[in-house]
Amino acid sequence: MPHQRQQSAIRSNVKCNSGPLNSLSSGPFLEMNLSGNRAQAQTGLDLLTRPWEAGPHLAETFDDILFIGKGEDERSGEDIGIFDWNSLGRIKFDKEASEPDHSLGYRLLTIGVDSDIPAFPRTLWDVALSYGTWVNRSPDDWSIGIIGGAGTANDDHFSNWEAVYGIAVLEFAKVIGSETTLHVGIDYDGNRSLFPDVPLPYAMISSRLIEDFSFRAGLPFSGFEWRAMDAVGLEVEYEFPTNVLARASWDFAPDFSVFVDYQHTTDGFHVDDQRDRLFYDLDRASVGIHWTKRPLIDVSFGVGYAFDQEFARGFDIRSLDDVVSPSDEFLFFVTLRGTF
Image 1 (cartoon, rainbow, N blue to C red):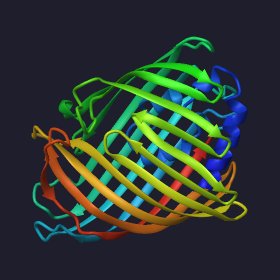
Image 2 (cartoon, rainbow, N blue to C red):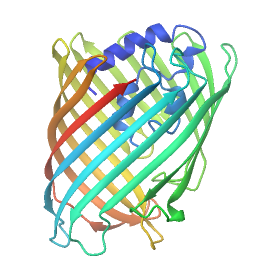
Image 3 (cartoon, rainbow, N blue to C red):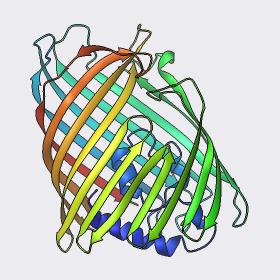
């Protein structure tokens, strides 16, 4: 999460992405995507385009565990507390490959609701698995990649077939400079918070202008990562249609950094016997410490504030009816990363 690890990722990608084919990766946004983009980070477009960590390994994992203090629903007056565990990962089949042709991605999100609000779900799940492959890779022409997968976003009713959704991406990538890649294609996410039933076109440019400044511009991702000074880093990223991450960090000692960040996330779930989905909207501001002693230790922890929380029902975010409004509360989080 903090920029100390971002910097090591940048340097490793400079080494790994030195060839023309490896330039298809969309730049050194590994940690940003893992933390900010809850849904697509491992099962959508980034499964193919996000650089892998340097060194021999088969899998990369990320677990963000969030405890939000117990408050009350501002509508019913009932007590409510929330536990949020977002687990992401991806697997390649050749541990020596820095840019594998085949990979698997997964996402497992569980949200526990501790409350006595009548007829309100106590557990929400979003579980997805996808497979990505480059069917053609060319240093001089368009490279073609495809992703296919499926998931279920439900209220602990895994037998609810209405909660099952598909994932599909058709990616065309072309290297247009030594440090710039153009990405265009079609993206389908059956649980997208906006237009879930429509395949959407996308276009995005990723580039590293200088060694300490990288950016992506377009859809589905826009943002930048800037090493402003040796010990100070800034990151901003937007993921279509709703998710936002902004973070500043300071490396105050070897293996340690401190950071502040803001995140906005929206997740949708199908509720049994209901036509519309239930959306959970969360804004969080946090401060924390990151400790890394690779390859064994990579952990972040800290405290923050959860605000503007809302559970609302609707087909998608264009038209929602609020049903539960948890109060603003303090939070505690732990984030674990693994490379195996």
